[in-house]
Length: 204
Image 1 (tube, helix red, strand yellow):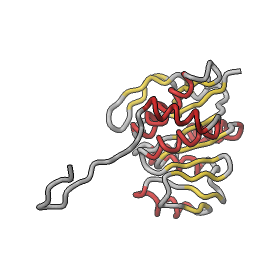
Image 2 (cartoon, one colour):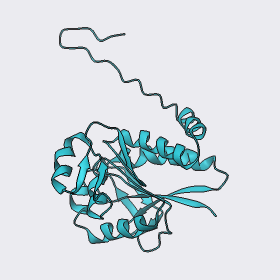
Image 3 (spheres, one colour):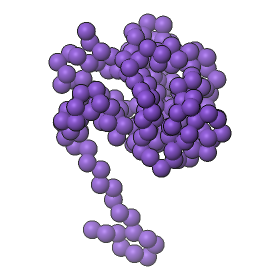
């Protein structure tokens, strides 16, 4: 039976929080001989617009989404209102209860917390929201880690950290060799540019 990775979308989600892991999981699924597939899901289905203006047509609504084996919740400005959206929180709570893995990127951690998945656990989020997550209570926040696993819950730090977390999860789902193949296909070997200080020349 095909297993399903689902990415939750909501208005004003952060683009790379969702698309970065989707790239990882999508390449993984394509090479899995039908064992895995990746879907997107939103409250009503249909089009969802990100904070940066990217529009994605969700594959499922909350009401017709199949049971997910892996649940991923991105962050973004929209999480500020989604934490009060019982439809979203209820969906995360229901799906996460039966999922093999429950994951978030960036401020998606706040939605996991509201749904009850971070109680008594270690977690992380975007550096700019670390103190706010601490204030939520009953969660130990690690502000200096790219991703944090506690049981079957994995939270990633801000934006690009979701790619690292997704590769880690692919290794957990299958093997390190599989994750390395996905990494190679993506040509994902981060080497950020070095920036010159004022009055200096940038390193070659």
